[in-house]
Image 1 (tube, one colour):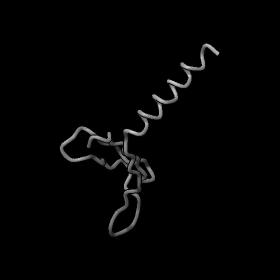
Image 2 (cartoon, helix red, strand yellow):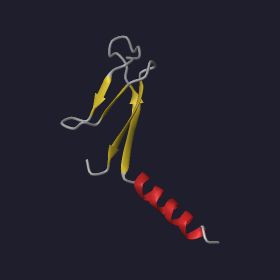
Image 3 (cartoon, one colour):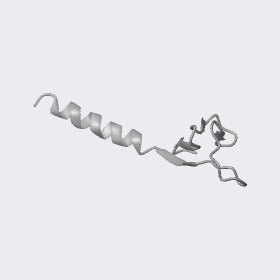
Length: 67
């Protein structure tokens, strides 16, 4: 029972931290051929937040809630 309050606190902390991000995911494709664009840069303008698409064109960008 001694570890129960600590476990509850950690779960609440993790939930709180997880709720403070927004995730945008998708797939980058060429407009003319609809082929995936591997290794394309995806960035939130005027921030250092960004990612690179995978070989399949898929990406996932995590943005802090304050943006």
